[in-house]
Length: 397
Image 1 (cartoon, helix red, strand yellow):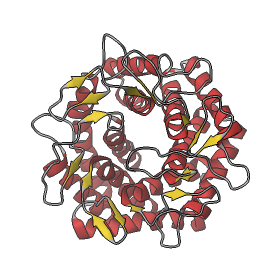
Image 2 (cartoon, one colour):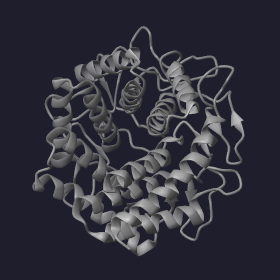
Image 3 (tube, rainbow, N blue to C red):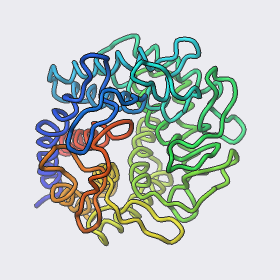
């Protein structure tokens, strides 16, 4: 079977998953009383509307529902996008200090006063996509306002890249851990990666030269500072990009491979081979692991391989491997994507309660202690992966 036909069949399965399972699942988690989406969705699908609600989850829902509206023009997508936008631009927006709160409690009170740049990145990403989908001027205004603040205080003009956090009033950088499982550091790959995708979309919808310049600077930082001699991405850094750990995150490697490709295409059109080869090197590392394990393991740290299959890692592997095939014509990338989809269908999708399990062991046993959704897990990673497959199949036909 020709490769384009194989991609089309993969995209058909993704389309069914998106329409029948992913989007309907998340739309039922909207909080019709207090606004926004449920801050916690338990593994059996129960919604806790009293749980804190965050900027990342609402920005991700905003992005996914806006992209879905563009893809299929279902009125439910537009309703969900407006619902997410109203909460992001309302309770999650700091009217005094500007930018967005990390989380707010059930009464709308902020729980962390610092401005976490990972959260600001997702706000820009979601707002830019919402503007692209609806032409809502307030969305672009908020995205551009946040961009200016990020460049004013979040950007490091000496060493390049962006800090992990700044204080509430955007005056000074702050060393902070992104979550309980992350290290406190000046800069992280993760924050800079999601600023890369946010700036890519913001440049696409605005055409502004200052955003283009910031995007190009950041892409070159990924090539020269964040990518390590091993070929993998570093995760945690001091201000001068000294690495703080030997962690290797395979999901971030493959996600970065296609996001860097996308950024380069937006910036330069045709990607110079010297740049493309760096992006593809990340994809080849992931492809080798998929061929060895049948799906993409989580990470490597101090010689220990964590073989857990995390939902977002599998979703990003789908896109990154298809992107590798598009860039090279090497069908082993497509075989890897097909293997990952097979794993997802057999083990990652929860056939009883819906959506995808957060984590599944290498033998296919789901971790039922992890929630189905909340501050991190939303309609974004797997929803975006399905829409990426659909769009790439259309382009290949």
